Image (cartoon, rainbow over all chains, first blue to last red; front, top):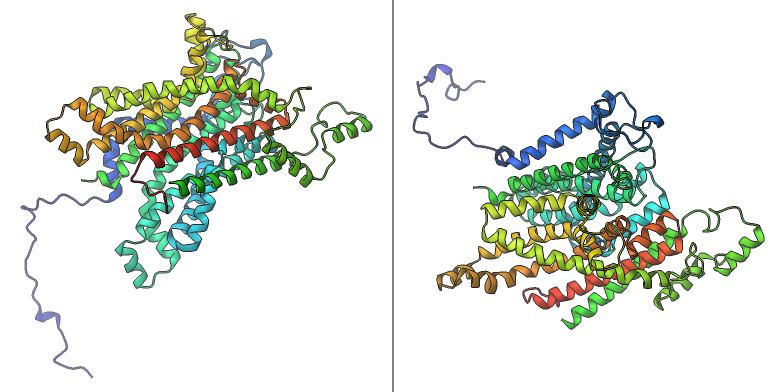
Length: 309
Length: 306
């Protein structure tokens, strides 16, 4: 049964020739938070330089050892402690190993430690801090009490001891560095979530029946992402630094594997006669740390919503 | 305040107990005893040695004995240096390390805080950029790179200072600078951000409107409040100086606690590692306790009695 009165025919309508007049439009194009942040980041020259160097060193770490004619462990005992030449641009060490290859290989080890450790810290920290901040109450009290205790334990000493017990090795370094590494980020995330969960849009999400998981993953974490990313940027050089420190006191990766820390440590012993042996690893560590710090500082300024005008 | 202090004191005791227990368990979880690493000893000798050091007791008895001794300030014998106790190592090394550490803290405070003030006062001008550039370098370059660099230039190339040992004031210059390098930069950054925040407050504007001189505003009004958050950095700073001294004392061959610690790690001298970790750990936890109390005393805005 069709009702004649409610039947709407296309013929009844006529298309008007109407065009929105945009000539007076002075509003600027809308930018998202991330576009805004990227624009601000680009204005900071030091941060951009840092980012470029990080990309270069990452690429060098991936393909460098692969392009080199030498292996990080090849010894050439007739050519020990050679000063830099065309064949060995960074010279050779006390076992005749090519230092350029070792520094590039060390970049692989050090960067991978930085990335893996800070990524693991990130996952644990976000889950722990997220749970504490979101659920609050007794659980929060308990989790934060635990963190307070862990926080006041002198972590570096326990990490050193743990490395003594576990012995040198890459996996053991991951374990030792993650053990206390997640605490800082867990605290940050908890604080952020605690503030965010009181906001109206979370209430709105709850009202339309979104579950805990959805609220955390879709609403809270994305808004805490700024803090998380900045923390990660500082976490990578932090892990590289701690590994180098451990390698330096003889608790890092085991020979013949080289990290920047072990290379610097080897170089110190021959500082007076062959200063180039410490110069290149030291330069690599310092420039990488500097880049991460510049980039991290820039990122923090760029992502800080209080700076948004 | 009294209640807060008592509460903090008890939490400090708990943390120290945790540190002792964790270190004890970690060291005792190392497979094999301290005498298995050396040449194979005859069984009878091994038995005697174990009995001498009570290693044949069950773990909980050893733990109880150790805890009792530590409370009385006795860290037991060193397994590697015969006729030397861990206490003697501490007595030898600690004064040297404390001297180096205090000098470094002093240097960091004397240089870092004024540098931060300069940055905040000339915010976004040349002195700010200049100082902050060096501060980022200071934060980025690890002390085990600063130290060899200093040695290379100021001991080898230009023989101003001795490169190693600890025998007089001229021996202290390079290690102190190397150890203070990072903390100075951290302190400068911290002072700067703290000062910037304070300088934008209303009461500073009021002071300016009253016609006070710039100098008096900075020193009398801003600095006092800006220094409060910096007190909280003292804990991490002491921590950094202490762990930094492990490396610095090694490089400069300074007979301090840090060097003994690293040596005992290389030698796998487990009782020494255990004792020194606990000693350092207690020191740090205690320093944090003092810093917390000081912070509560200085800043009346903090609610200490919850």
